[in-house]
Amino acid sequence: MNKTLKISFSLKNTYRVNGVLFSLKQIPLLKRLLPATLYQVKGLKIFANILSVLWEIISVFLGKFLYFVTMVCGIGILYKGLPENEVFLHILLFLTVIGSFENTHIFNPTKDKYYAMILMRMNAREYTLVNYFYSILKVIIGFMPFTILFGMDRGVPLWFCLLLPLCIAGMKLFAAAVTLWDYEKRGFGYNENKLSKYVWGCIALLLAAAYVPPAFGFVLPAVVPMIIFLVCISLGMASITRLTTFRDYYAINKELLAGLTNQMDSTAQAQLVKQVNEKKISADTSITSSRKGFEYLNELFIKRHKKILWNSTKKISYVCAFLVAAVLVGVYLLPEAKSATNEIVMTWLPYFVFIMYAINRGTNFTQALFMNCDHSLLTYSFYKQPNFILRLFQIRLRKIMKINAVPALVIGIGLALILFATGGTDNSLNYVVLIVSILCMSLFFSIHYLTIYYLLQPYNAGTELKSGTYRIVLSVTYVVCFALMQLRMPIMIFGIMTIVFCVLYSIVASILVYRFAPKTFRLRT
Image 1 (cartoon, rainbow, N blue to C red):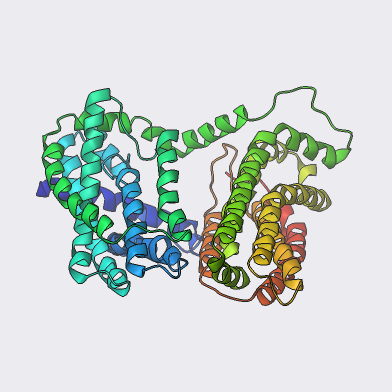
Image 2: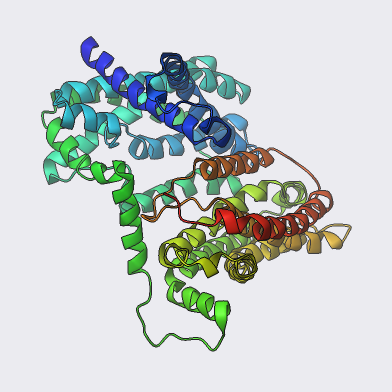
């Protein structure tokens, strides 16, 4: 067992170190300074090993901390007037049930499993169990400080806060045992990365059970989730026998890892994405346009890629409209919630930067542009002339703005209606600024993704993502949007700041594209 654990650590550490070294080579300023024989430099390998070990330690706690801050306590503070301990335990119970099936580790196909069990022919049962129980240990250690910190802060007894990590681990053990039993009965492997529509349906229902009843003033009495959690300790202990006596770990892992080779091959993965996208492109030869030049080219592209570009936008818009309607019904049925809801709308506008980031279709649009249009046309010199590039940039920006504006308009008008229904505001300009600022957020992300596509063009001829700088820009965008979730500012101030920033960004983006895109908008090697 100790030998298996050491080999497992070595495997994970090796590809993490290689990943760190590869990432360093992708940073523009470091790329020229680092030697070609980077992987042979002992000092850098030691540095990468230290980072790998630090990440192993940090990852034990970081995810759990964010989980409590956002999904449990972060949303829990919205339910004012309800006992904090009951809200905490109610939400945690349903989310733990989701996590027990959605985040199993044992049914997660990973690179280290492929290397160990398929390539190195290690004992599948021993490797799986050693790593699974190690992951359970990390769950217990990782949850312990936060169940104590956040639980006691909300009035949960210390003794129960100490037992909660064991309860969560017990539920995970029980879920894994049930899944193995199901595999023996049906012979069908469970893959937590490819959940069926029925599992997604159950997850949606459990999320609704976690968050909707408290909005209407109902939560489970504290004793109910406490009893269920404590029962999970016994169920988990009983499940250990089932896990250790299961004999078909090689078969189940072989089935899980069957498609992993394609996922690990970036070329094959890019081709798979391309094939999936091609199936969504209309082959109708009757599609035409009355426009001329680049307008003609772009309109044909939009019409033929309607499924890729518009279907997800429509679905997002329907979901947003449903959520707005649900909130309006909620405040109508619970008038006492109007004041809190009004305060949220008036001060939580920065939070919607992250929401607009999450629903924006900019990356899908640029990926479709390259795979099905630019990757062929970039071989022609006329296509890279400054005037033509800026003209096509403006045409495409207009289209992607229309696509992203639909859900943005639903959200903006929806927030204005919620603000009005919950007591309104002294300054009627807040309604206008609210709607316009949401549209400007959508506009910003449309401009942003199209601009970095033109300035960094991250794909090669095989449609593989090759630009490290592009990845860094996307990561920085995510971090900034996530940080803005913590900001609270009145609608008028943040809204005007958003509008002004968006206008300035659009001007700067156009100048940058005109000046630099003729050199940067090219096929990568």
